[in-house]
Each structure stands twice: as structure tokens, then as C-alpha cells.
Length: 174
Image 1 (cartoon, rainbow, N blue to C red):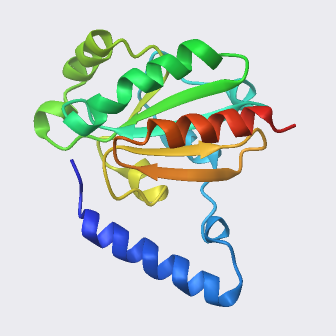
Image 2: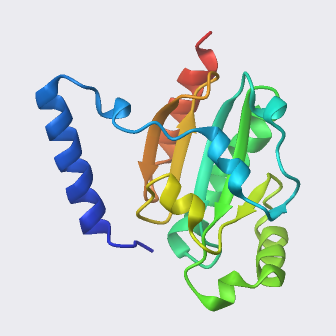
Image 3: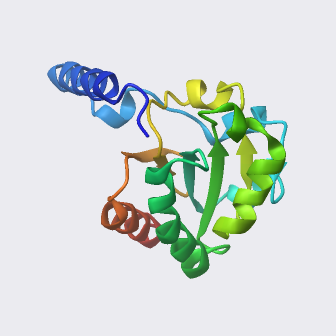
């Protein structure tokens, strides 16, 4: 499910072109921080401590549980979780609901169990994290390196290879 996807693509393209003309890499345009996650007050599967993120690659997955596109990304995220967590990779979900049904915490909890999501998930019913990170569409994965720097933002489903290669490359960096 995409929230103004055309707008997001147009804005990203304009930003990238504008920055390139100034000689600035697109990744330097905005620097969302992992510390922003501390704004979340409700968590499922435990709130991650800063010490659990330090020195690890962190994938922040913005999704909503009834989104079919989001559901298509979950098997790859589960595989990454089992392959790399907790020593090299941390996955953090941010559940930003599209519908009133998805805002109900009982439904979120049931979906986590049903989908086999074992990593921490922040509840973002008011879209505070969504807006703070500048997210425009479900699903969006933001991948941070071991130093907490945003290194990739991947929007949409069907990009498992890009996610995996980015994570592998960041894990290999020292």
C-alpha cells in the first residue's frame, strides 16, 4: 500500500537532482537518527536498549500489518533476523497503521504472533516516527550502519536482494 507514492518519487527525484547539482550525496540530505525511536512509548517484543543497537547494523521496517506489500517483505526480514540477529543485525519494526482496525493494539499483537515477528515493534498510531523519518509509503526499510548512520532507504516490496546485499555489505564493513 502506498501513501502518495508518486509524490514520494517526485520529491526524492527532485531532492537527488538538486543535491547532485550541488555535489552533495543524496544520503547526506537528511540524517534521521536511531535515537528518534526513543519517541515511541508503546512497544511489542520489548523496547531495544541503545546498547543493543550500538555496533550493529540496524534495519528499521516501517509497515502496517494488513498491507499486502508489507506482508510480502516479512519472510525475508524473518530470514535476516534468524541469520544475523542478535550479534550483527537488529531489526526494529515501526507499525504505522493505515486503518482504525490496525490501530487496535490487540490486533497488532495478534498479527505479530500470526506473522512470526519476534523483533521489537514500536506502535506509531499518530505517525510521529513516520513523519520524523520522512517516510512516504508502506513498506519502507531504513538501514543504518554500525555507527548509526543511515546508509539506505528502500521503499516497496520485491527488493529483497537489495536489502540483503546492503545488509551483507554493512555487516562486512569494519
